[in-house]
Amino acid sequence: MTHEMATAIFHRLGQVDLFFSNDSTGQIWRKFVEPDFATTVLANADPMIVQSIRDSFQEGTSSCNPASCRMWYIPTILPDGWTVYAFDMLRKRIIVLDPAIGPFGYSNRRVSMHEFVSNKLHAALFTCLQSFFSSWHCESGHWGRTFPIIIRETIEKEQTGLCATFFAWNYDGDKLQTPLNKDTLASHRSLMIYELMRMQGNQTPVANDALEAVKVSFTAL
Image 1 (spheres, rainbow, N blue to C red):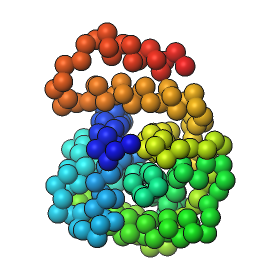
Image 2: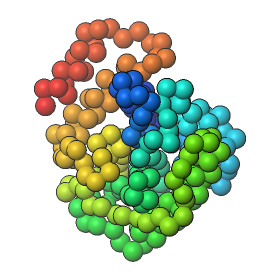
Image 3: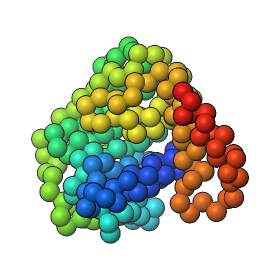
């Protein structure tokens, strides 16, 4: 999955969450940070000066309070595929969701790589949070990490981006609400296509019958 496609998908997932938070008195439980953030941080650039990142953090803050948000999902493209780093503000831990490991677990080398990446993301994330939100409450010190093995199938490199969107959409802080297998991943792919077609601000005309055809492909599974 390209960086641009992942950015569009995570932007749309954020729109969906904000829509369903309209009746929750300004509270949201998760926030999707678009991939520009991790890419900028890992390039040793300042994310605070990138307008798309500022917009991503502040989107929806007029109606929802980010300080109420427990889970912050940061999708990151690495040399061998995509990973999602889930920052759990309640338990002060970083959950590494790496589809490339499949059912085999993390090698020492891969753990070290994720520690390096997540340390950089952690520092940059809290710099942004404390700058953008005066009501921010969670401290940045004394955080831990977990490396769960949450899939039982081998994932090809070209599927890691789709898996990253699956993890971010379905991981509730403890487990996947929907188990990942070939069927659920295929259904999720159709769901993402459907949601991209419905993105707010998308000016491309899409025929209703095309939308319904895509919708049927994932609701039937």
